[in-house]
Image (cartoon, rainbow, N blue to C red; front, side):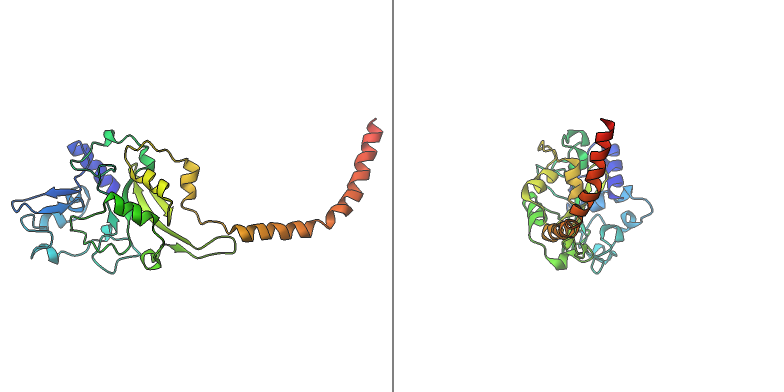
Length: 248
């Protein structure tokens, strides 16, 4: 939904939405989450949002939370789950970029990050800096943040925490948490020139193998099979030799 609304905004204005916009006569700033509202079908918020007062003014603070801006796993507050990364290196800049100015592969460039317990109201004009985003993607896992975003461990796989990210091409990826710093930076930058192998990128959404158990399983299979090998050789090898002799 966000990707389509942002795409429609870009088609209309010739550039991506501003991360923070000044609207109305108050001079107060509003979030991109409000700016793209007119491009989201079947919503009445633009008509009732008071653009002449702050986002947390008397009228606006009474507006309901919006499920579009909340991950289904984190709907207990009015916090938004979806944050932009605002920095010269990234998609969201001041002034806003044209889509054509972003030279990195759009399928490998992050547009929005799903953040559990962001402590940012959906109306608030606040998102992530570049350093905050790198820290978020690479920091050790806090299980409380990943409620609903975890696959339990299995015999051959480790416990798998993940977060969703919306990419600039409209796709949504599931990324393992945490990422290594090099990969995080490559995904965040808009014109960094980095390229990630598609297979490697896909693997970031998969749980990691427990190699100790995998190797142990292979060893058990080998131990089970080895006693059978001599018997098979006794039966098969003479037959092969006999066939080769008769052919000669």
